[in-house]
Length: 385
Image (cartoon, rainbow, N blue to C red):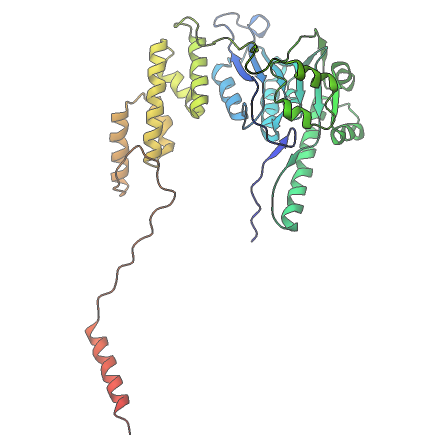
């Protein structure tokens, strides 16, 4: 059976770009104890200012971070300024916003392009700055193989095209299907007023000047229909060695006793270390007592993860972190687990080999009876007339 070459589908400019400009992702929780209903709760604010997917914020990081601080009541406002990225990450963020229901608002501060527009349209309400833009276009990918492989990939691209259409139509059910398909095929840049007329936006707000995260100027220039006004803004941006765009505030610099800031610190540190699955166990085990406790638990969790990976039992990491076990206790439990399973190998901090060594084949001992019989048979053949 032929095996299809692995590939990813993107909804951005058709070239992978080095991230050279300033971009960032930020999520801040509602202030604790401010209001018991959605009407008087402080909003949870999320900024997706940069690429979506492998080179920026992934859907997994986004969902884990949101899950760590969402109280189920507070309004959620997601601000977008992105050139797009991985289509499936964009669809996952779209669905995550959609599950929040009426308390979710997407705000396009400057640009929501390709996968970014797919993600933004998952919100119950979409507000665009008067000078912001929404861009829709076809997905693309790269692959290799024979004609059968390429036809199969083309079929997958057709299916993902339909997923994009479905995402936009979920936001604007009344939009003309043929016109929507034409716009996506043609790579269409929509102003706030045009998006409002189509039903993709619900409100046009005040314009703001946001240059820092228009993102990857080289990628922007590779789009076929990039408006000249946006390219002019990119040309006006300061050089990397000159003035720097405003950076987000340090969200972990709040009062050490602020449980919201401590929860956010856990979410951010876990995302950086690739252990987002440990956010909830760490919050539960530390009870967000103070900053020192949280920092110690984060360091301990990374060590526990490394031990479990070395023992080829990564699935036990969450259990050990939840219990607040020290590395020595984890080693003891892993040793007991391995001995009881009959696998008597040493636990260390190195990564396990890709494959187990093949079992050595033991040589068989010589059989005297067989040797004697073979010799007699040879002697009898030689004695024939």
